Amino acid sequence: MGVRLAMGAPGGRLVWLILRKGVAQLAIGLALGLSLAALTAGPLEIILYQVQARDPLVFGGVAATLVLVGFAASFVPARRVARVDPLEALSPE
Image (cartoon, rainbow, N blue to C red):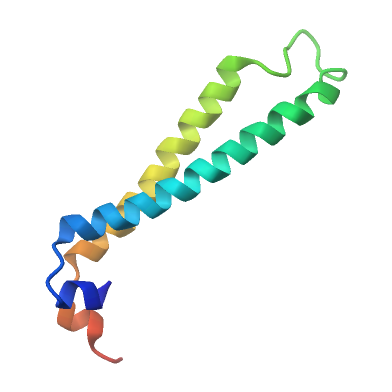
């Protein structure tokens, strides 16, 4: 990212690049996780008492929480990268 900044890339473009990669990983993980949860919920219904194993409200709440946390986990480092001085990023320690 330091090289991109040094070459003149705007900070907003770097933020978008990092967010896009983070959201893509989030979407893949969410799709796989929700699919596996839906598949394994059937056998678990036997041990649940007066609760549906595939409750749409629970699945939606989990998905919404993961999206918010995943977006924040991508946005905070992306914003930090955009604020770094290019000379500081490229200098050896």
